[in-house]
Amino acid sequence: MEQQQQYVGRWVTRDGYIKKELFADGKFDEARGERKNISGGNYTIKRNRIIYSNENGHYAEADLSNGLMYERGYIFYPESCLISKPLLKNVCVL
Image (cartoon, rainbow, N blue to C red):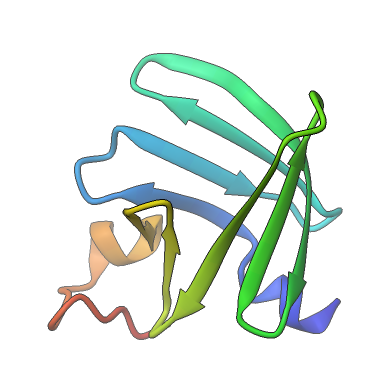
């Protein structure tokens, strides 16, 4: 649970189009563009990997490295990094 807490919050692609919100209770919500709540469900974190399962029974995985989330060719940044901190070589220091 402690490991999960460090990833709670909003993660976004650099262009801000895809947003993932990870909640402390193990739930997640995804938005794309102006469309909110397009997907949601549960997530767990095992070592450096997030495993998602949505309400339709689909699964997805994302890798966590250097303060970033890598999922299906996308790089997600903690929203706070894009707002207040410069990125150096795609690394966000939390």
